[in-house]
Length: 189
Image (cartoon, rainbow, N blue to C red; front, top):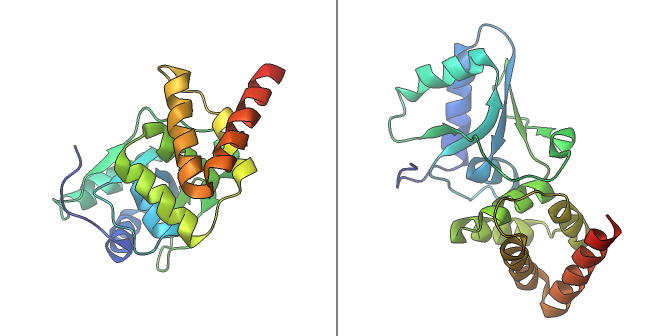
């Protein structure tokens, strides 16, 4: 369970540098969630934890060793998450100063936005809004990526959350257009 402390970009960079220092060879991890938002898209964003979907075994061991020195920072391997199909083909390697062996990969920004909106928590939606203010999303890309995302539970509830976000970011007419695009894509498949 995430803590209540908040960690910004500088703390996250320091953490990954400490992980990098533990590695004897090259390794990588796939980062998602608020840490990806703060490191890549909204430098002022703060997170309560570090979520990752995959890491090399040596990187996992390094994370475990480093975490002992960061007792208030939960680092969690996310077993279940909702992402657009083929999102792994669009992963981007971060350029974090001082890393020699560790490669940190993050989802492409539209993919990350869809991952956040499918969770539906207020904090996730706020993160997507901040990402949009920093660099506006392309509506067509968001719709395409959301349509590719398999979710558990009622699809209509996921759609309502997504369309609500589209309305917040782009306005009511865009949300109506996005709903029509989703329906058209689903009928053609």
